Image 1: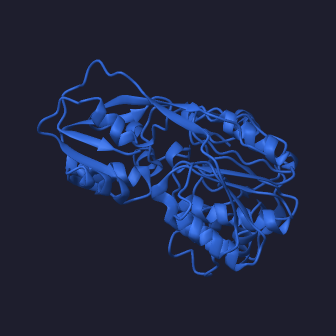
Image 2 (image 1 turned 45 degrees about the vertical axis):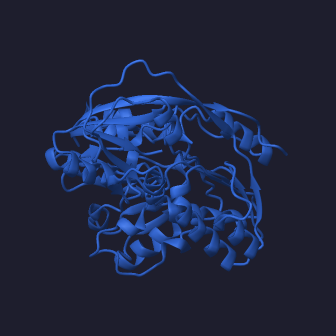
Length: 315
Length: 99
């Protein structure tokens, strides 16, 4: 096997172990790696002009969704983060497929019952015999033609003993994360360097810390799923809300959690109105709320304003 | 509060158009007697940036920012437009989570 591979190192959400494994694989198979630092953000745009295999991990779309397909037909490795790639359905018959996501596995099982499905334990992957690996995927983004099984993404619960550490946090908020870990008496996994970075860690006790600076749809169901998983495993969880404008997504998630009659505690990392919508809903649902602002803003003296036609507020 | 920081800094713009992300910010601007001519509704920074670029064209834009805050949409817009990020405040950690 040989070929070339495009890797966007700059926007990695892979753990070091992931990257090392992929790089080793490439090296062992004479696959040339092309560094795509500073290319376009959108993976769609990236793939538009780069027809070859790629590893592309745009920060803005960062999820822990990981799928690696070893495409024997064309002889290259492709890594895709945000979808179950179409190619995963076209793997050779009876291929060995590691899968960390119960729902994705069900989908794939229905689509390709001939695949051999194995639980994904990243450290145990035998790269010599593995055909493909997939993990949590944004099932909502599965191509329409493939998404025919009508499984709610909210039902997505990681397999047993496949703990996930998911962190979605702002730069310079390591202190927050540390504080959470101390509060919850949880072990930290991974080193979090980048803004909006997410790591998933397998073969570890589940940990759920969720700090939402910008909650996108992709994260809403992941959050819900992880909370359900945490409850199922009798684990504590933290919900940290940073931005008011995503409130509705959070409320939606809380409502769904509450509907399942789990005991809940929600930590909100900002001051909230005692009689505000969020508090009202939480009270109604008998959710215990802890709200505490963890940061303050201090104005900066601005010496020079550039000329402009527009001013865009996004905080 | 951050909008207040911006206007308290007395930006020298007489004829400038306002854009914002989310209806809440638009409402705050409205309460200040200002109209947002672009109100981004998408929760995806990429989608929002694309939508705004259509409106922006080749125009210039200033994005008031938080010095150590997220750079999501700023970093995307920078690739295709004349974007200036002006940090108007800095975020500081205030306290540990109380047990």
